[in-house]
Image (cartoon, rainbow, N blue to C red; front, side):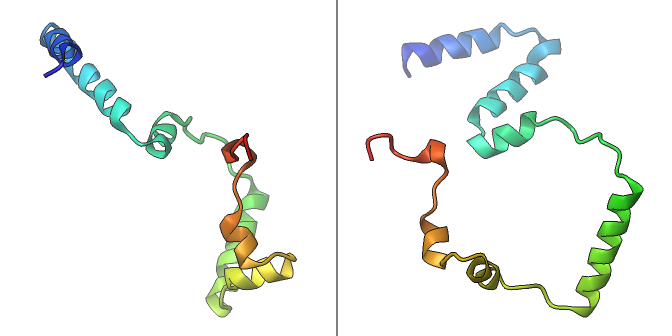
Length: 99
């Protein structure tokens, strides 16, 4: 066990019982993958859904009861892209600055 691990264990042993749950949750948070961490700290959606939005969702559900969805490949092609372009796309902040 490393000195850092021993120190972490010693600190954990000193956490008061009434704060232990919070300490454990914090440790679990540290171990989350980036996506799960982002979801864990995302604000709760509390915006009211408008009547217009409710109606749009209802129309969408009705449409899907009588129609098949549009294949993603078709949407890509109709948008002027190829599937190869989509598969190789990376966000700007993911690109290698040396490239």
